[in-house]
Amino acid sequence: MNYALNWYGSVVGQSGYELLTRGLLIALDKLGVPVSLKNLDTWNRETLSQTSDITSRLKRMVSTPMIEGAPFVVMQKWWPDVPVNDNTYIYSLFETDNIPKDWIPGFRRAKKVFTFSNFNYDKWSKEIVNCCRLGFGVEDCFRYSEGKANILNQRGFTFLSVGDYTERKGFDILLDAYCEEFTINDNITLILKIHRGGFTVGHKMLLKQEIESQLLKYSNHPKVLLLMDKLYYDDLPGLYNACDCFVLATRGEGLGLPVAEAMARGMPVIVTDTGGYMDFVNEGNGLTINSIGEQIESIDYIAKCPNALNHYWRAPDKNDLKAKMRYVFENRDKAKELGEQGRKDMFDKQWNDVAVQLLKGIFYCE
Image 1 (cartoon, one colour):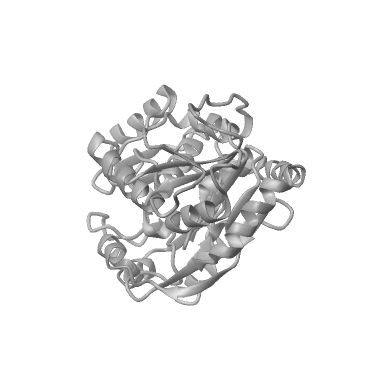
Image 2 (image 1 turned 120 degrees about the vertical axis):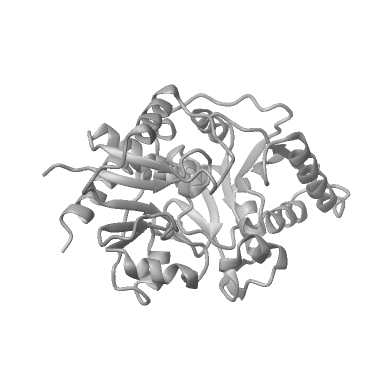
């Protein structure tokens, strides 16, 4: 059988969707599958530096004309400019307890909807009959890179958290928990690799001011370092290698690739007890934060993500987070054991296997 695909997706940035899209596309290209790519460049205008090999592969896909008769594979939902046809497949995820209502008609029109975790599949399969679960991969740079980043002013045991600085990621809870549990007298650092809205001087200044305002509540707070510049993607493992524990007090994750990346680098992880990453985080490789469900009421967040209106996410228990952070700080040998088990668990998460699974789901589906 001759495999070929027409693909609609965003590939230039660092969001979860873009990481998944790049991972799948590069794996398909290495398998020799022709792909015509329409980059959804209006979805996210931020770009992340890539190797010349990845850049050239993606440019070739973008320059490939639409392949007549090939299935369409579409990121997130059914976009308005996707041709109406009976051979379209959607890959998608969402961070709350439900499917956005305006996605459902497109989901039902598609031949199949692939999602990446039981967190989504268990809920979505009750709404749509054509939903199936797809795996994920971890890039080789996280599997093998051993070099450490040189981080100015880093001190002692280091927690790391990574992501877009939104309400959903729970950085507000993390900062409060960290500053209440530890003081300047502790040999410790929290590194936040964050961004919000962009990477310009203005974006970074406003975000820094907001975080410093929150820290003013704590006159004796421990060290906090903000990393707000873009990083070359292959340099990210060096940041993980320079830290001791990954923590994400998130309110919702459809998958949580940074958690998998941290585990691939041998880091113990502390994460909220509900989310897509719970498919691979367990008591043998990480610690979970107790949480309760709460309706999303943040006007600012709903303004940015209208699809979350009337949905629920999780509220991490701050006191339990404090206890888990204290535990890894004081039980470093045990924390290293958790991290080593996580490294083993992530080692075989290959994008090649996911690409093969996708092809089987498209070309051999019933």
